[in-house]
Length: 392
Ligand SMILES: [Zn+2]
Ligand SMILES: [Zn+2]
Ligand SMILES: [Zn+2]
Image (cartoon, rainbow, N blue to C red):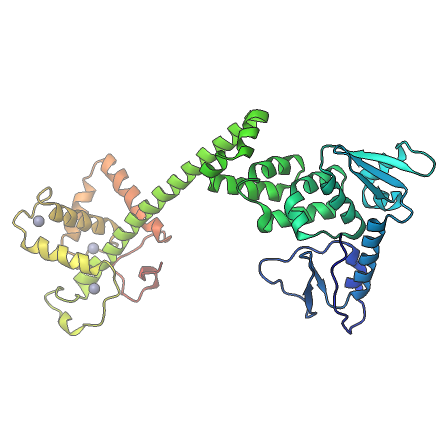
């Protein structure tokens, strides 16, 4: 196994990067990461390396050969399924403080020591041990054993392998089948980023995940965790609903805001077919920038001609009355205002009940809030005022 990776020799001399390369290099990112100009090669195992570190590749090949050949191996690692892996105490002890401790107290004959790794398939233990030697792995092996490798990296305190497992999971190995296991593991292994990723995936694909074997076994072994996940699912759904409700509400207030702008614009400048009597607005046929103008134009036309032009009459007139009253409540200068009934409503407002006042104040606040502008906003401002531009 192993040592199939070869890198074409490149001319630049080894650098610090090369010297430090016995630490595992992270797997490639989905988007090519910026580098400092050096050519980046992709190794067969999926890790990247800079082009000028052929020396360290040779070194890694050597470590791989040492593991494969077991030259002067002084430790045997036994697994539950009968596997025996030969290794070197000095390498294991340097790579993992936990293994170092185990080797100290391990039984053995003469120079040979024997330790056991329980609960993990021998092939996974082999991949783990190879990583301790050369920081290398094959993609297929990582795919198959990422879960036990993550467990071992945590149990034997090998942070570099843990990081590799986390990155591999994040960039493709996390799937609907293993996400519940990974979620539980990430909690046990103190991998908060992985917890977040898997939690997010569970919530996003809840129906499919609940049907998996992983979910069923979690339900049996950790019913409390299942309950927590269900609760967070409900909370997430509520948040989504609240978000939709808020966005709908905001849309309504925004439409009212735009209607207020268009009303002032029609009554002051005139637009298309409608406008003040003393103005020749038909000359001004540049495309109108007020989105609400067209709808309002129809409403004003209706209002002018409707027989039931009383509050509570037809629904269109009722709407027009509401808009006129709303305008009056937002209008800063009724004396200069050209919107019909603006002053009349101002007079009426003086005599309103406390309850009505609160209701209107709240509405005005919400409408102004949609544009995030506060204070005394006048809708009788020139159309080039920034505060009333139809910004999104
Ligand atoms: Zn217009
Ligand atoms: Zn009407
Ligand atoms: Zn007004």
